[in-house]
Image (cartoon, rainbow, N blue to C red):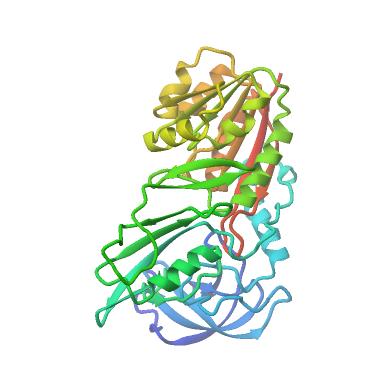
Length: 404
């Protein structure tokens, strides 16, 4: 093992110069040829770090003192920064966060000779760098008969009790304060709270707990996107940053240039946001979604729209059964990307325009390479959209056209 007998011990300290950022959102240094991951540093900084964990492949450390700070360093807004590890970048000024995220995407683009890094646009900023999330999942620890609520540090697995999460919207933090110390006999709690509604979904059902002043155990909640209200059941996926989702919809509409005609296929459609938002720009929408709860949500939310057909099943099975000519195709797959059969079908049916939405640039570029390498489609641009300020994560849009 790489770190076996390395001479370091957990709890010890060392000085390091931070190297480049990796996909983990952390920088790395090297000591005695051993990779050292540094939480809370910026590349080029000289830092004093504490050793949190010695693993077979690396040493994990956290900054305790900045000996030579970067010009991009700012004071973290949250007192739990580096303790809970939910945020990786609160110590980095926001303008530089956007630059780093674009570079992350460009690094993935650069793995393929067919693509140019210049096709990656500047990152679209988020107007709110804090309090933007509408969904939280907290860990509960029972200590001395008191149910404390917080997070688990990803490096040392230590539980951290918190009184406020700076990423969550104020409604979630209100629920957190009411739950803190009153969650005996539970291990986790999930909270969704509408950005533009007063609706909430809190699970599990805590109604037997007389110390809690709010309702819980709901089966669904409601959220608005561009003034359209959507029902979202507990198992249904929904974006955590609604203002940025609205920007994505605006950008997507501009890129697709729908003219009021043709067929739009909304693959991996979830609760039907894209299909419903764009239904007025096409003759017909075919929405494909595997989750039966999401399809039910979409049908209820969009019952006023009569040109959308919902097909429940795996995208790779259903898309090959569509016989009509596809003019516009939206792909919003899970983090792992598109199923290979989906890409194979796209290369056969050849829609005129494709918009791909992804929260994983690596898997997105793999899929784009498959669609582009035979010359049937051309990637016009890739647009990073910052859905997740203060973290390493980045959402991307990619626009492709048939190369005829």
